[in-house]
Structure formats: C-alpha cells, structure tokens
Length: 92
Image (cartoon, rainbow, N blue to C red):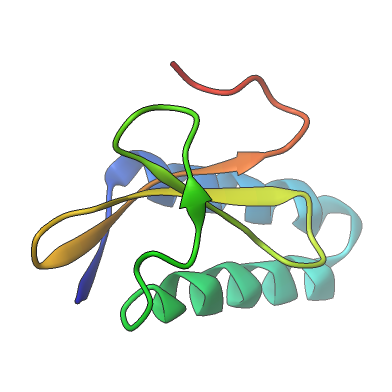
C-alpha cells in the first residue's frame, strides 16, 4: 500500500520536530525517524494500529515517545491524518 501524508500531518511532524529541537536537536531527528519508520511499516501492515477514537481511523502509538500517529486505511493507500502528542486534546 502507498503511504500518503496529508498536509496537516506534515505540519504536525514539523511542529513536533521544532518543539523537541529547541532542547535537543539529536532527539528531534531521532523522533522524526521513529515516526517515519512507524508510518513506513503501515505499507505492509496497515491494520497494525488499534481502532481509532473516531470512526474510520486507526491509531499507532510511536514507541518510546509521547506521540500517536492517526491514520485511515483506504483501498490502495494509507493516509496519515495527524501526528498527535498524547498531552494534546484529541481532534474531533
């Protein structure tokens, strides 16, 4: 399956990087790699995340981080909808 990042998810990724970068540039780069690796796993295993809180979505916890990848499985692709810090309010 093809992975498609929606603009909002890409903005979330950039925001996460920028936030962590202020304190630790190396950790910021490692976080981005973790998130990208998790997203890439969805190519082969699109249902590895749990059912999402919003119908039609799924959630993948990014291990050893406070982030969740929110996505939707389509017929031939996986759409990355959001990257959400667990301390933030869940989107509606």
